[in-house]
Length: 152
Image (tube, rainbow, N blue to C red; front, side, top):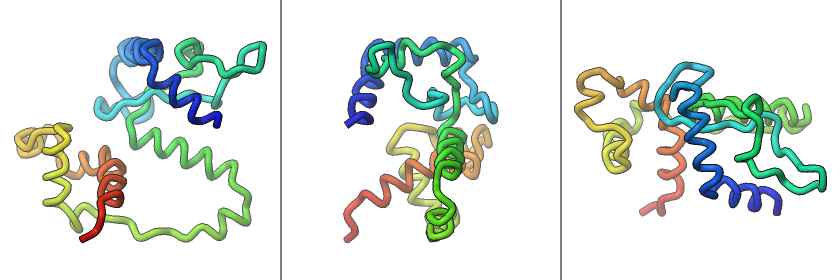
């Protein structure tokens, strides 16, 4: 499957070095919102193929096809792209899931932040990173892990 092959390329040392270079060149900030946490490199325009039709290694993508985004902006970008490519019938039939709010699971979220080492409690206590901001940055990862856990 094409996406499996691509994922393998993203795990390569060549991509990791290229990713680090792009992050450094772009000042370690999300190009959309300016955040410096949870940064990812977005490949604009999807896969690139070489002259033989093979997937081009993402480490060889030109700079203008790569963009530094935080997790939230990256997810929003993909959501917009998916929305643009989704048929109107399918768009109308998608049911909105209830949104988990920070107030519903604040203690659990704080414990998760500590367990992942993303942010230390004293950082949000001193308002370096307000808990609401951390929720905006990391709630997607938290919710995925929470839903993947077996329910008692």
